[in-house]
Image (cartoon, rainbow, N blue to C red; front, side):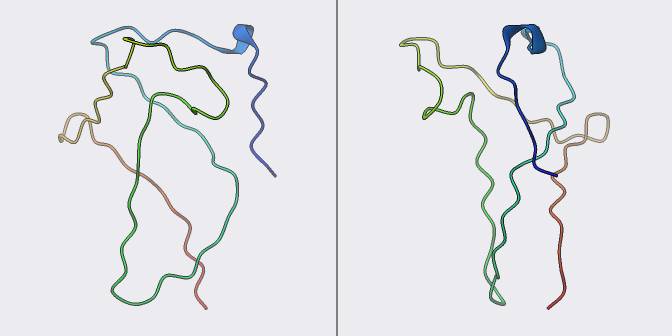
Amino acid sequence: MVPYRTFASGDAWPLVPGEIARLTFDLLPTSYLFQPGHRIRIAIAGADASHFAILPGCAPTVRVYRSRMHASRIDLPVIQP
């Protein structure tokens, strides 16, 4: 199953500034073989610049909470060779 986005305005909802929101989403499937000792970098952005216009002066503040009360996580599937 491939994640599908409609990009329809009716499927979107605004986030409330200062309010913690739980976001869950799937990514397009891809695979990569990491060699021992290599690391993964996760980059979080406010929009996909190749699909959406970037408005000047409107850069969002993105906060990732990492406390006991508001834990964050990223689940990456691992397939053993």
